[in-house]
Amino acid sequence: MNNNSEKTMLSEKELKASNALKRLGIPKMENLILLCLFEKEGLTAREIERTADLRQPEVSQSVNALKKKGWIKASSIRKDGKGRPYDRFHLAKPIEGIRADIKGRVQKKMETEKQDMNALYDMLGIET
Image 1 (cartoon, one colour):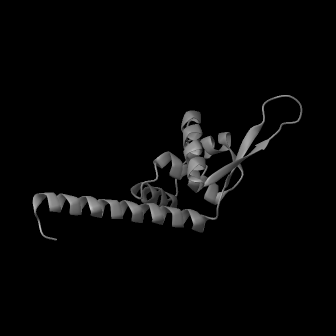
Image 2 (image 1 turned 135 degrees about the vertical axis):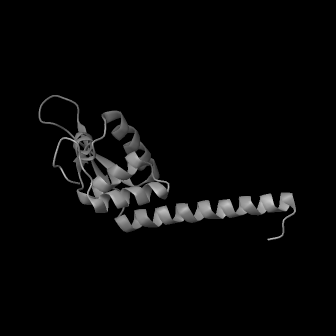
Image 3 (image 1 turned 90 degrees about the horizontal axis):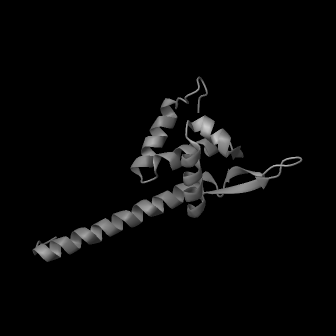
């Protein structure tokens, strides 16, 4: 991601990737965080906020959703002296594993939609 100004501008390639992930059912905030971590591992929430031009609540919610999916993990870092520790975020599995998970989710959704269409056809008495 480019850091040309205060607001982050996605490169054309990143914009296409973000739009593709969104069409595949990955919410925009989540896919922006994934793109950040694909590019550079070990980012803090604040670094993700700045890089992806997201607000803290958006990052917090999306990071939690990505952790539930098993795609990212956090490592807690203690500061020297006083203060709360902070997290650095990393991919929990290789990019290929995340791609395979997305593919599986898409295939499952397609199968469910096919079953729904068949049930509708049966109800309406339409031959398939």
